[in-house]
Every structure is written in structure tokens, then in C-alpha cells.
Length: 271
Ligand code: HH2
Image (cartoon, rainbow, N blue to C red; front, side, top):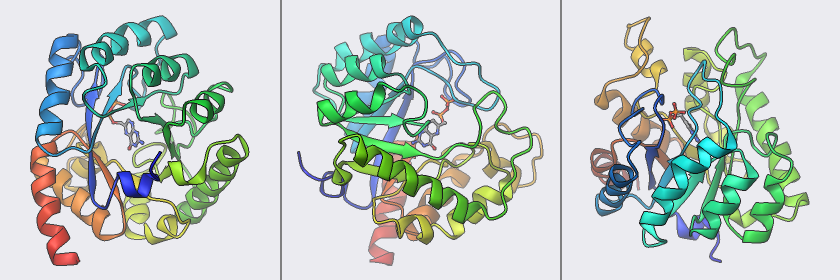
């Protein structure tokens, strides 16, 4: 398998398709498998390098979903796409990952960074899939209660470095792994901004960095709406371009077409 850095050259776009009733920005939109598969195909036509299929919302306050429910949501979509559309699976469950890679998923996107399911590392190692390791403080149900760090950037970097070593020790080739600071996962607005501002400290770990700011509430709050639960498109685009300028390789976004255009211009200017 080609190294992740060659498969996903900077900047690459990861489209988001949440097959959930409750995701914070597209909940319910893709519950019908045909609608989800259509969105995934359209995202690739619009320039996404890969589409991230998820059956569990990790929005602040969410409770989690059973294995059967998660499989019932994502498997029909993966079957419809039939390995013809490049997909990743957004899951922390080994069995969901196993089924997904069997149906052609190239990448396992685990927001728990191999802390959720002790079987997941072996599934990734044996399948040869790519892996994204993301930082999260706490768990979705409580993570936004009162997140605290002494130095958010060095703590997130140290965490990701430790999880990278763990994954490699579990038999997953380092060249197949990317790292993600987990914007919005147990972080205040200031923590998120600081992580983006000093993204070079994450890039310095030597692995491609994936960033997801798309439609996240911190952008809406940054703009002065203290009750925001999402954010305007323009804010998401600015966030994606800023993350790319600071070294991000893969941008995880809901609005693929607009982000691809914004990044194409940014790439020329920042080259
Ligand atoms: N953000 C979300 C979900 N998965 N994975 C990675 N690697 N990085 C992220 O920033 C990230 C992620 C949350 O966004 P979304 O999927 O739109 O919402 P929900 O979790 O409510 O389904």
C-alpha cells in the first residue's frame, strides 16, 4: 500500500457523510442509504479524495450507539458504494471497522485513538488500512463540561505522539497513520484557536495532520454567537484554509465543492 502521505497529498479533502439521526450539522440528512451513497459519490465528483462514513454521532453530549445500530446504518451505504468510491469509516468499534474494510474502506478514523476498543488495533494492523488517531479529552457525553489544560498544544502533541508509538507497537506501519488534534473534542474556543495557531507543533511529530473544523460550534462562537451549535460556510472555509496554511494535509469537511475551490487558490498562493 502506498504511504498515506502519497495517497493524500497536501491539501486533500475528506468529505463527511454522517448516517445518523443526530449529528450536529447533517443529522438525519443521510439516514436513507441511497441518499448517503449519492452524497458520497457527489463529494468525490466535487474533488474529495475520500469520504468519511460515520454511524455514530460524537457531537458534545451524545450518548453513543449500539454495535448493531451502527452496523445497520453504515453497512448498507458501504454495500451501495461497493468499493467504487474511496471511503473511510468513522468508528471506534473493531467490528464496524472489520466489516467496513471488508467492504472496501481504505482508512479507519478512530476519534478515541485506539483507546475505545482493544480489538481495533489488530483489525487495522491485519487489514493494512490507513488510520487516523485523534485527540479527545474525556468522552463526547461530558467533554465540553469544563475542559482544562496547562498547555493545550504540548498536551495534545504528547498524547498523539504516545498514541502513534502505541499504534506502531501494535503492528500498524507508521507510514499508514495520520494525526488529528481533535478540534472541538474537549476544548474551549480558545483551546481550538490555539491548536490551529500552533499546528506546527503537531506537524512536527512527522505524520500528516488531519483537521476537522467544518461547521463546528467554536467557529460560530468565535463570531460572537455564544449559543451557536454550528457555523456559517464562510467560517468553515476560512478555518480549512487557515489549517492548511499552518500545515494540515487533510481537511475533513461537509461542504466539499466549496472547500476544494478555496484550497486550490490557497495552494497556489502559499506554494
Ligand atoms: N469531527 C467529528 C467527527 N469525527 N474525526 C476526525 N478525525 N476529526 C474530527 O475533527 C472529527 C471526526 C464531528 O463532526 P461530525 O462528524 O460532523 O459530527 P457528529 O460527530 O455529530 O456526527
